[in-house]
Image 1 (cartoon, one colour):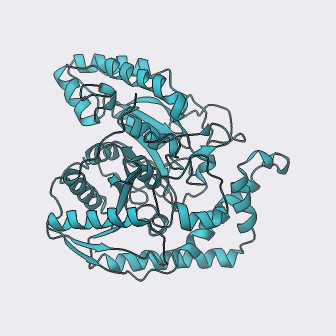
Image 2: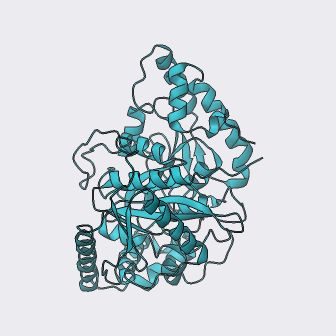
Length: 465
């Protein structure tokens, strides 16, 4: 059972305070986390691989703290890396039996930023194959399970990151999000997941969904997510979409609250998106808490086009292109659902694809105009609580906008920041969640609103033996 004194379940901020006071060392923390991983990961299956070099990094960090010379804002803090992201010395398998087994020769920009801040990379977490879906399984590593109830999925595609965050496998975790792949597992695993503004965190190499995808933090607290964002959100010339360097601590202003901010409750993201009673109750609770904190909360509709018609083309064409990159004789090794989507979407013409891009820009314009009136948008994160981990897939195209991502992919199309925040439990003890979005590049506002909700309704960790 975890306790308040268990280093494995402390926040990054708490760990850094202990390091500064010399009441804990990075080596002691790494040992506590790896013991917890050894005990719990056989059930949860959150890791693709553990990094043996983590101990050397922790020892080096301990020496720096002993000398009073930490090198950065995360010195000695354990971090995991999603296995869609390059970590030098380890292969990036992307959950696939068809991926390259050779080790990456360079760190991705986000990993380089974390290492520069002194983070200790614990290992690589599981992902759905090439990040294509929301249930947390893949052909290469099997099923990843939810710490709240292992019979259920933690979500995906950042499945291992969501499970690791909830289980206390260190405080900070890299996720990626092309249609909800940070926010969906955050919602189903009961943690915080931030999809930053497009380009805020540089990425390289770009994945299949490069023009809508973002990389961001997953953590058990909003302040930790903000702290992690500061280390990753540094310009890197490898990413042609990267924003100019903005060396800031995203925790600055995070406690300012939402007084006098205008919040729009969104109930229709361009189509009649499904949400169950628990999702609506979480939405109502969050709206009440923001209003009690001084925000002006009203229901409003930005008049979005049908975002299903847009994202379906983005998603399907990207997967069809991915499948075409493999020899036909080996494609049977891919996830059958991925192949099904690629077959269904592979016939989209260039004109139809460009028409979808025009609709994507129209959606972004509609939201930009909407944010001239409203500072924040509040809506559900997912249609329902985490489904069973071994539930049959069914029609993946239908599942995309009925069971997985109807509330998340619009904000990938518009490229604006959005965050998932835990908001109570279902009667079955599974996490509920809400989502907060802001105008493009106003990541500070989503962090402020999420922190307000977190303070008003704190969320526990699962009790794990």
